[in-house]
View 1 (tube, rainbow, N blue to C red):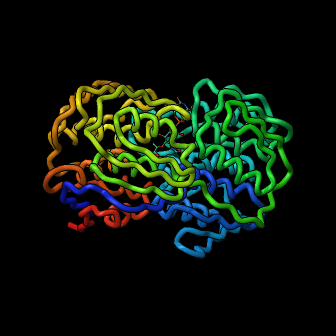
View 2 (view 1 turned 30 degrees about the vertical axis):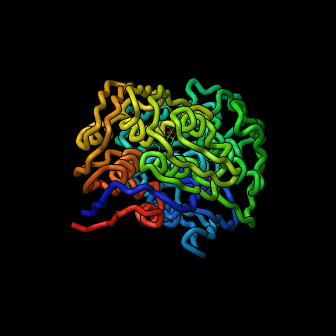
Length: 419
Ligand code: EPU
Protein backbone atom coordinates (compact mmCIF):
# COMPACT_ATOMS: atom_id res chain seq x y z
CA UNK A 1 0.00 0.00 0.00
CA UNK A 2 1.23 3.48 -0.79
CA UNK A 3 0.76 6.68 1.16
CA UNK A 4 1.81 10.30 0.84
CA UNK A 5 3.79 11.61 3.77
CA UNK A 6 3.65 15.38 4.09
CA UNK A 7 5.42 17.64 6.59
CA UNK A 8 3.99 21.10 7.03
CA UNK A 9 3.33 23.90 7.13
CA UNK A 10 4.92 25.08 3.88
CA UNK A 11 3.84 28.15 1.91
CA UNK A 12 3.74 26.99 -1.73
CA UNK A 13 5.75 29.29 -4.00
CA UNK A 14 6.68 29.26 -7.69
CA UNK A 15 5.16 28.07 -10.94
CA UNK A 16 3.05 25.03 -11.78
CA UNK A 17 2.03 23.69 -15.22
CA UNK A 18 -1.51 22.42 -15.59
CA UNK A 19 -2.14 19.15 -17.46
CA UNK A 20 -4.90 18.34 -19.93
CA UNK A 21 -8.38 17.96 -18.49
CA UNK A 22 -9.21 14.54 -17.06
CA UNK A 23 -12.93 14.84 -17.69
CA UNK A 24 -12.34 15.88 -21.32
CA UNK A 25 -9.73 13.18 -21.98
CA UNK A 26 -11.90 10.38 -20.57
CA UNK A 27 -14.62 11.33 -23.06
CA UNK A 28 -12.35 12.05 -26.04
CA UNK A 29 -10.74 8.60 -25.84
CA UNK A 30 -14.06 6.73 -26.20
CA UNK A 31 -15.04 9.31 -28.86
CA UNK A 32 -12.18 8.00 -31.02
CA UNK A 33 -14.32 4.86 -31.51
CA UNK A 34 -16.50 6.96 -33.82
CA UNK A 35 -13.56 7.53 -36.16
CA UNK A 36 -12.85 5.09 -38.94
CA UNK A 37 -9.24 6.21 -39.08
CA UNK A 38 -6.19 7.33 -37.14
CA UNK A 39 -5.83 10.45 -34.99
CA UNK A 40 -3.31 11.95 -32.62
CA UNK A 41 -4.29 13.46 -29.28
CA UNK A 42 -1.88 15.55 -27.28
CA UNK A 43 -1.96 17.25 -23.87
CA UNK A 44 -3.45 13.98 -22.57
CA UNK A 45 -3.13 13.75 -18.78
CA UNK A 46 -1.13 10.63 -17.92
CA UNK A 47 -3.45 9.45 -15.15
CA UNK A 48 -4.75 6.01 -14.25
CA UNK A 49 -8.27 6.57 -15.68
CA UNK A 50 -6.71 7.45 -19.05
CA UNK A 51 -4.36 4.45 -19.00
CA UNK A 52 -7.28 2.17 -18.10
CA UNK A 53 -9.35 3.53 -20.99
CA UNK A 54 -6.43 2.94 -23.35
CA UNK A 55 -6.24 -0.69 -22.18
CA UNK A 56 -9.99 -1.11 -22.76
CA UNK A 57 -9.78 0.41 -26.25
CA UNK A 58 -6.82 -1.84 -27.10
CA UNK A 59 -8.77 -4.91 -25.95
CA UNK A 60 -11.54 -3.81 -28.33
CA UNK A 61 -9.15 -3.68 -31.28
CA UNK A 62 -7.73 -0.14 -31.23
CA UNK A 63 -4.00 0.32 -31.78
CA UNK A 64 -2.42 2.92 -29.52
CA UNK A 65 1.08 4.33 -29.65
CA UNK A 66 2.31 6.61 -26.86
CA UNK A 67 4.45 9.16 -28.75
CA UNK A 68 5.33 10.96 -25.50
CA UNK A 69 3.94 10.60 -21.94
CA UNK A 70 1.20 13.06 -22.98
CA UNK A 71 0.53 12.25 -26.62
CA UNK A 72 -1.03 9.20 -28.23
CA UNK A 73 -1.77 8.15 -31.77
CA UNK A 74 -4.81 5.93 -31.92
CA UNK A 75 -6.02 3.80 -34.81
CA UNK A 76 -9.65 2.74 -34.41
CA UNK A 77 -10.14 1.24 -37.88
CA UNK A 78 -10.25 -2.35 -36.68
CA UNK A 79 -12.64 -2.45 -33.70
CA UNK A 80 -13.45 -6.14 -33.55
CA UNK A 81 -15.91 -6.58 -30.70
CA UNK A 82 -19.06 -5.05 -29.27
CA UNK A 83 -18.19 -6.28 -25.79
CA UNK A 84 -16.10 -3.99 -23.62
CA UNK A 85 -14.07 -5.86 -20.95
CA UNK A 86 -16.62 -5.96 -18.12
CA UNK A 87 -14.13 -6.23 -15.25
CA UNK A 88 -12.29 -3.09 -16.40
CA UNK A 89 -15.29 -0.96 -17.38
CA UNK A 90 -16.93 -1.28 -13.97
CA UNK A 91 -13.80 0.16 -12.31
CA UNK A 92 -14.49 3.78 -13.25
CA UNK A 93 -17.13 6.23 -14.30
CA UNK A 94 -16.20 7.33 -17.78
CA UNK A 95 -16.67 3.81 -19.18
CA UNK A 96 -20.28 4.91 -19.77
CA UNK A 97 -19.02 6.92 -22.77
CA UNK A 98 -18.32 3.61 -24.51
CA UNK A 99 -22.09 3.20 -24.82
CA UNK A 100 -22.72 6.38 -26.83
CA UNK A 101 -19.61 5.92 -28.93
CA UNK A 102 -20.21 2.24 -29.73
CA UNK A 103 -23.90 2.76 -30.46
CA UNK A 104 -22.71 5.27 -33.05
CA UNK A 105 -19.91 3.09 -34.42
CA UNK A 106 -21.35 -0.45 -34.32
CA UNK A 107 -24.95 -0.04 -33.16
CA UNK A 108 -24.26 -2.30 -30.20
CA UNK A 109 -22.32 -2.52 -26.93
CA UNK A 110 -22.13 -4.60 -23.79
CA UNK A 111 -20.42 -2.83 -20.90
CA UNK A 112 -20.12 -3.15 -17.09
CA UNK A 113 -22.14 -0.71 -14.95
CA UNK A 114 -19.87 2.31 -14.43
CA UNK A 115 -18.03 2.61 -11.10
CA UNK A 116 -16.08 5.71 -10.04
CA UNK A 117 -16.01 7.89 -6.94
CA UNK A 118 -18.67 7.08 -4.35
CA UNK A 119 -20.43 10.42 -4.15
CA UNK A 120 -23.96 9.11 -3.52
CA UNK A 121 -26.44 7.80 -6.08
CA UNK A 122 -25.15 8.16 -9.64
CA UNK A 123 -28.04 7.14 -11.90
CA UNK A 124 -27.67 7.13 -15.70
CA UNK A 125 -31.35 7.44 -16.56
CA UNK A 126 -30.80 10.58 -18.65
CA UNK A 127 -28.15 8.81 -20.75
CA UNK A 128 -30.55 5.92 -21.35
CA UNK A 129 -33.44 8.23 -22.13
CA UNK A 130 -31.32 9.97 -24.77
CA UNK A 131 -30.18 6.70 -26.37
CA UNK A 132 -33.75 5.42 -26.47
CA UNK A 133 -35.02 8.61 -28.10
CA UNK A 134 -32.37 8.09 -30.78
CA UNK A 135 -33.79 4.60 -31.35
CA UNK A 136 -31.63 2.33 -29.20
CA UNK A 137 -32.81 -0.39 -26.90
CA UNK A 138 -31.06 -0.40 -23.53
CA UNK A 139 -31.36 -2.98 -20.75
CA UNK A 140 -29.40 -3.66 -17.61
CA UNK A 141 -28.88 -7.14 -16.22
CA UNK A 142 -26.58 -8.38 -13.44
CA UNK A 143 -24.40 -5.30 -13.50
CA UNK A 144 -24.06 -5.26 -17.29
CA UNK A 145 -25.58 -2.73 -19.69
CA UNK A 146 -26.68 -4.03 -23.09
CA UNK A 147 -27.45 -1.37 -25.69
CA UNK A 148 -28.45 -2.08 -29.28
CA UNK A 149 -29.82 -0.07 -32.19
CA UNK A 150 -30.86 -0.86 -35.68
CA UNK A 151 -29.68 2.50 -36.98
CA UNK A 152 -29.94 5.67 -34.90
CA UNK A 153 -32.13 8.60 -35.92
CA UNK A 154 -31.67 12.17 -34.71
CA UNK A 155 -34.32 13.44 -32.28
CA UNK A 156 -35.10 16.33 -29.95
CA UNK A 157 -33.96 15.39 -26.42
CA UNK A 158 -34.78 17.40 -23.33
CA UNK A 159 -32.56 16.57 -20.37
CA UNK A 160 -34.58 16.55 -17.13
CA UNK A 161 -31.37 17.18 -15.20
CA UNK A 162 -28.29 19.13 -16.23
CA UNK A 163 -25.83 16.28 -16.63
CA UNK A 164 -22.27 16.42 -17.92
CA UNK A 165 -22.16 12.68 -18.63
CA UNK A 166 -25.57 12.44 -20.32
CA UNK A 167 -24.91 15.51 -22.50
CA UNK A 168 -21.61 14.11 -23.77
CA UNK A 169 -22.89 10.56 -24.14
CA UNK A 170 -25.94 11.54 -26.18
CA UNK A 171 -23.75 13.84 -28.29
CA UNK A 172 -21.47 10.86 -29.03
CA UNK A 173 -24.41 8.67 -30.04
CA UNK A 174 -25.88 11.41 -32.25
CA UNK A 175 -22.77 12.24 -34.29
CA UNK A 176 -23.29 9.43 -36.83
CA UNK A 177 -27.10 9.21 -36.46
CA UNK A 178 -29.35 10.03 -39.41
CA UNK A 179 -30.73 13.58 -39.21
CA UNK A 180 -30.57 16.23 -36.53
CA UNK A 181 -30.45 15.83 -32.74
CA UNK A 182 -31.14 18.74 -30.44
CA UNK A 183 -30.10 18.38 -26.81
CA UNK A 184 -31.99 20.88 -24.68
CA UNK A 185 -31.02 21.74 -21.07
CA UNK A 186 -27.51 20.54 -21.91
CA UNK A 187 -24.61 20.91 -19.48
CA UNK A 188 -22.12 23.67 -20.42
CA UNK A 189 -18.82 22.61 -18.83
CA UNK A 190 -15.60 23.39 -20.75
CA UNK A 191 -15.00 19.66 -21.29
CA UNK A 192 -18.31 19.42 -23.18
CA UNK A 193 -17.08 22.12 -25.55
CA UNK A 194 -13.77 20.29 -25.81
CA UNK A 195 -15.36 16.96 -26.77
CA UNK A 196 -17.50 18.76 -29.37
CA UNK A 197 -14.41 20.54 -30.73
CA UNK A 198 -12.59 17.21 -30.96
CA UNK A 199 -15.47 15.58 -32.83
CA UNK A 200 -15.86 18.58 -35.17
CA UNK A 201 -12.12 18.49 -35.91
CA UNK A 202 -12.59 14.84 -36.96
CA UNK A 203 -15.54 15.72 -39.24
CA UNK A 204 -18.66 15.96 -37.03
CA UNK A 205 -21.21 18.78 -37.25
CA UNK A 206 -21.98 19.90 -33.69
CA UNK A 207 -23.09 23.43 -32.89
CA UNK A 208 -23.89 25.22 -29.66
CA UNK A 209 -21.70 23.23 -27.24
CA UNK A 210 -21.14 25.48 -24.21
CA UNK A 211 -24.74 26.72 -24.34
CA UNK A 212 -27.76 24.84 -23.07
CA UNK A 213 -28.93 23.86 -26.56
CA UNK A 214 -26.64 21.64 -28.63
CA UNK A 215 -27.52 20.81 -32.24
CA UNK A 216 -25.90 17.79 -33.86
CA UNK A 217 -26.35 17.24 -37.59
CA UNK A 218 -25.54 13.59 -38.21
CA UNK A 219 -22.69 12.91 -40.65
CA UNK A 220 -21.94 9.63 -42.43
CA UNK A 221 -18.35 9.19 -41.26
CA UNK A 222 -15.53 10.61 -39.13
CA UNK A 223 -12.22 10.10 -40.85
CA UNK A 224 -9.58 11.32 -38.40
CA UNK A 225 -6.11 12.05 -39.79
CA UNK A 226 -5.90 15.07 -37.49
CA UNK A 227 -4.17 16.08 -34.29
CA UNK A 228 -6.13 17.43 -31.32
CA UNK A 229 -4.97 18.99 -28.08
CA UNK A 230 -6.99 18.43 -24.89
CA UNK A 231 -8.16 21.57 -23.05
CA UNK A 232 -6.29 22.42 -19.80
CA UNK A 233 -7.85 20.98 -16.64
CA UNK A 234 -9.75 23.73 -14.87
CA UNK A 235 -10.21 21.57 -11.78
CA UNK A 236 -6.48 20.91 -11.47
CA UNK A 237 -5.86 24.66 -11.93
CA UNK A 238 -8.45 25.43 -9.26
CA UNK A 239 -6.88 22.87 -6.94
CA UNK A 240 -3.54 24.74 -7.10
CA UNK A 241 -5.26 28.14 -6.75
CA UNK A 242 -6.83 26.97 -3.50
CA UNK A 243 -3.57 25.34 -2.41
CA UNK A 244 -1.88 28.76 -2.79
CA UNK A 245 -4.38 30.35 -0.38
CA UNK A 246 -4.56 27.43 2.10
CA UNK A 247 -0.76 27.21 2.36
CA UNK A 248 -0.30 31.02 2.68
CA UNK A 249 1.67 30.88 -0.56
CA UNK A 250 2.05 32.58 -3.93
CA UNK A 251 1.66 30.52 -7.13
CA UNK A 252 1.72 31.23 -10.83
CA UNK A 253 -0.50 28.62 -12.43
CA UNK A 254 0.40 28.19 -16.09
CA UNK A 255 -1.37 26.61 -19.06
CA UNK A 256 -4.92 27.25 -17.90
CA UNK A 257 -7.91 29.08 -19.37
CA UNK A 258 -8.78 31.61 -16.72
CA UNK A 259 -12.25 32.19 -18.22
CA UNK A 260 -13.11 28.65 -17.04
CA UNK A 261 -12.21 29.61 -13.47
CA UNK A 262 -14.33 32.73 -13.00
CA UNK A 263 -16.62 31.39 -10.26
CA UNK A 264 -13.60 30.28 -8.23
CA UNK A 265 -11.65 33.49 -8.88
CA UNK A 266 -14.63 35.55 -7.65
CA UNK A 267 -14.83 33.48 -4.43
CA UNK A 268 -11.10 33.72 -3.79
CA UNK A 269 -11.28 37.50 -4.11
CA UNK A 270 -14.40 37.57 -1.89
CA UNK A 271 -12.59 35.74 0.92
CA UNK A 272 -9.64 38.13 0.70
CA UNK A 273 -7.23 36.24 -1.56
CA UNK A 274 -5.34 37.94 -4.38
CA UNK A 275 -5.68 37.01 -8.04
CA UNK A 276 -3.91 38.30 -11.14
CA UNK A 277 -5.57 37.02 -14.31
CA UNK A 278 -3.28 36.79 -17.32
CA UNK A 279 -5.67 34.88 -19.62
CA UNK A 280 -3.60 31.72 -20.00
CA UNK A 281 -2.01 31.82 -16.55
CA UNK A 282 -3.18 33.03 -13.18
CA UNK A 283 -1.26 34.17 -10.11
CA UNK A 284 -2.91 33.56 -6.75
CA UNK A 285 -1.41 34.67 -3.47
CA UNK A 286 -2.25 34.92 0.21
CA UNK A 287 -1.98 38.12 2.20
CA UNK A 288 -4.39 37.69 5.12
CA UNK A 289 -6.51 35.10 6.87
CA UNK A 290 -9.46 34.26 4.58
CA UNK A 291 -12.91 35.67 5.38
CA UNK A 292 -15.83 33.32 5.95
CA UNK A 293 -18.02 32.55 2.93
CA UNK A 294 -21.23 30.93 1.78
CA UNK A 295 -20.86 28.62 -1.18
CA UNK A 296 -23.28 26.59 -3.25
CA UNK A 297 -22.01 24.19 -5.86
CA UNK A 298 -23.77 24.35 -9.22
CA UNK A 299 -23.32 23.17 -12.80
CA UNK A 300 -20.95 25.35 -14.88
CA UNK A 301 -20.60 28.34 -14.79
CA UNK A 302 -21.49 28.00 -11.10
CA UNK A 303 -19.01 27.01 -8.40
CA UNK A 304 -17.81 23.48 -9.34
CA UNK A 305 -18.53 20.56 -7.06
CA UNK A 306 -15.10 19.19 -8.02
CA UNK A 307 -13.46 22.11 -6.16
CA UNK A 308 -15.76 21.99 -3.15
CA UNK A 309 -13.50 19.84 -0.90
CA UNK A 310 -10.40 21.93 -1.74
CA UNK A 311 -12.37 25.10 -0.87
CA UNK A 312 -13.50 23.35 2.32
CA UNK A 313 -9.85 23.18 3.43
CA UNK A 314 -9.48 26.94 2.96
CA UNK A 315 -12.70 27.66 4.86
CA UNK A 316 -11.71 25.34 7.71
CA UNK A 317 -9.20 27.99 8.86
CA UNK A 318 -11.15 31.08 7.72
CA UNK A 319 -12.07 33.92 10.02
CA UNK A 320 -15.63 33.04 11.12
CA UNK A 321 -18.23 30.45 10.21
CA UNK A 322 -18.76 29.40 6.60
CA UNK A 323 -21.43 27.27 4.95
CA UNK A 324 -21.15 25.06 1.91
CA UNK A 325 -24.23 23.67 0.19
CA UNK A 326 -23.44 20.82 -2.17
CA UNK A 327 -26.18 20.69 -4.78
CA UNK A 328 -24.75 18.09 -7.18
CA UNK A 329 -23.73 15.06 -5.08
CA UNK A 330 -25.44 13.53 -2.03
CA UNK A 331 -22.27 12.45 -0.34
CA UNK A 332 -19.39 14.80 -0.96
CA UNK A 333 -18.54 15.79 2.59
CA UNK A 334 -16.75 12.59 3.60
CA UNK A 335 -13.47 14.55 3.66
CA UNK A 336 -14.76 16.74 6.50
CA UNK A 337 -14.40 13.86 8.99
CA UNK A 338 -10.74 13.58 7.98
CA UNK A 339 -10.22 17.37 8.31
CA UNK A 340 -11.77 17.18 11.78
CA UNK A 341 -9.04 14.65 12.68
CA UNK A 342 -6.62 17.45 11.75
CA UNK A 343 -8.27 19.89 14.15
CA UNK A 344 -10.93 21.40 11.87
CA UNK A 345 -14.38 22.09 13.28
CA UNK A 346 -16.84 21.08 10.59
CA UNK A 347 -20.38 19.79 11.01
CA UNK A 348 -21.69 18.09 7.89
CA UNK A 349 -25.22 16.91 7.48
CA UNK A 350 -26.65 15.70 4.21
CA UNK A 351 -25.79 18.16 1.48
CA UNK A 352 -24.67 21.02 3.77
CA UNK A 353 -21.69 21.61 6.00
CA UNK A 354 -20.86 24.30 8.53
CA UNK A 355 -17.20 25.26 8.85
CA UNK A 356 -16.27 27.02 12.10
CA UNK A 357 -12.89 28.45 11.22
CA UNK A 358 -10.05 27.28 13.50
CA UNK A 359 -6.65 28.98 13.82
CA UNK A 360 -4.63 26.08 12.58
CA UNK A 361 -4.72 22.47 11.28
CA UNK A 362 -2.45 19.75 12.65
CA UNK A 363 -1.00 16.75 10.81
CA UNK A 364 -2.74 13.36 11.15
CA UNK A 365 -3.20 10.09 9.24
CA UNK A 366 -6.16 10.63 6.87
CA UNK A 367 -7.98 8.56 4.25
CA UNK A 368 -9.18 9.90 0.93
CA UNK A 369 -12.69 8.75 0.09
CA UNK A 370 -12.63 9.98 -3.51
CA UNK A 371 -10.51 11.90 -6.00
CA UNK A 372 -11.18 15.51 -4.93
CA UNK A 373 -11.29 14.58 -1.25
CA UNK A 374 -7.76 13.23 -1.77
CA UNK A 375 -6.60 16.51 -3.33
CA UNK A 376 -8.15 18.42 -0.44
CA UNK A 377 -6.33 16.26 2.13
CA UNK A 378 -2.99 16.86 0.40
CA UNK A 379 -3.60 20.61 0.56
CA UNK A 380 -4.58 20.29 4.22
CA UNK A 381 -1.39 18.32 4.92
CA UNK A 382 0.77 21.01 3.30
CA UNK A 383 -0.99 23.75 5.33
CA UNK A 384 -1.04 21.82 8.63
CA UNK A 385 1.58 21.81 11.34
CA UNK A 386 3.33 18.45 11.66
CA UNK A 387 3.18 15.18 9.76
CA UNK A 388 0.20 14.10 7.65
CA UNK A 389 -0.13 10.71 6.01
CA UNK A 390 -2.66 10.50 3.17
CA UNK A 391 -3.93 6.99 2.35
CA UNK A 392 -6.05 5.57 -0.51
CA UNK A 393 -3.93 7.14 -3.22
CA UNK A 394 -5.64 5.11 -5.95
CA UNK A 395 -8.42 7.71 -5.90
CA UNK A 396 -5.98 10.60 -6.38
CA UNK A 397 -3.96 8.87 -9.10
CA UNK A 398 -7.14 8.46 -11.14
CA UNK A 399 -7.28 12.18 -11.82
CA UNK A 400 -4.05 14.04 -11.02
CA UNK A 401 -0.86 13.55 -13.00
CA UNK A 402 2.34 13.42 -10.95
CA UNK A 403 0.64 15.12 -8.07
CA UNK A 404 3.43 14.81 -5.51
CA UNK A 405 6.06 15.95 -8.03
CA UNK A 406 4.03 19.01 -8.93
CA UNK A 407 3.59 19.91 -5.25
CA UNK A 408 7.25 19.17 -4.44
CA UNK A 409 8.44 21.54 -7.19
CA UNK A 410 6.58 24.42 -5.53
CA UNK A 411 8.04 23.72 -2.12
CA UNK A 412 5.90 21.04 -0.49
CA UNK A 413 7.64 18.51 1.69
CA UNK A 414 5.82 15.49 0.26
CA UNK A 415 6.95 11.93 -0.38
CA UNK A 416 5.23 8.81 -1.75
CA UNK A 417 6.09 5.88 0.47
CA UNK A 418 5.28 2.18 0.00
CA UNK A 419 4.31 0.30 3.15
N1 EPU B 1 -27.85 12.52 -12.75
C1 EPU B 1 -29.05 11.85 -12.82
N2 EPU B 1 -29.29 11.08 -13.92
C2 EPU B 1 -28.40 10.94 -14.92
C3 EPU B 1 -27.17 11.63 -14.84
C4 EPU B 1 -26.91 12.42 -13.74
O1 EPU B 1 -29.88 11.96 -11.93
O2 EPU B 1 -28.69 10.22 -15.88
C5 EPU B 1 -27.58 13.40 -11.59
C6 EPU B 1 -26.38 12.92 -10.77
O3 EPU B 1 -26.77 11.95 -9.82
C7 EPU B 1 -25.90 14.21 -10.17
C8 EPU B 1 -26.20 15.25 -11.25
O4 EPU B 1 -27.19 14.66 -12.08
O5 EPU B 1 -26.68 14.52 -9.03
C9 EPU B 1 -25.01 15.65 -12.10
O6 EPU B 1 -24.36 14.50 -12.59
P1 EPU B 1 -23.49 14.52 -13.93
O7 EPU B 1 -24.09 13.55 -14.86
O8 EPU B 1 -23.29 15.92 -14.37
O9 EPU B 1 -22.12 13.92 -13.40
P2 EPU B 1 -21.20 12.84 -14.07
O10 EPU B 1 -21.22 12.99 -15.55
O11 EPU B 1 -21.46 11.50 -13.49
C10 EPU B 1 -19.12 14.41 -14.16
C11 EPU B 1 -17.70 14.33 -13.69
C12 EPU B 1 -17.67 14.48 -12.18
C13 EPU B 1 -18.30 15.81 -11.79
C14 EPU B 1 -19.73 15.90 -12.37
C15 EPU B 1 -20.38 17.25 -12.13
C16 EPU B 1 -16.73 12.85 -15.32
C17 EPU B 1 -16.16 11.51 -15.65
N3 EPU B 1 -17.16 13.03 -14.08
O12 EPU B 1 -19.80 13.31 -13.54
O13 EPU B 1 -16.30 14.53 -11.86
O14 EPU B 1 -18.38 15.91 -10.39
O15 EPU B 1 -19.68 15.66 -13.80
O16 EPU B 1 -19.63 18.27 -12.67
O17 EPU B 1 -16.77 13.74 -16.17
C18 EPU B 1 -14.41 14.35 -10.50
O18 EPU B 1 -13.75 14.65 -11.50
O19 EPU B 1 -13.94 14.29 -9.35
C19 EPU B 1 -15.83 14.02 -10.69
C20 EPU B 1 -16.54 13.36 -9.79
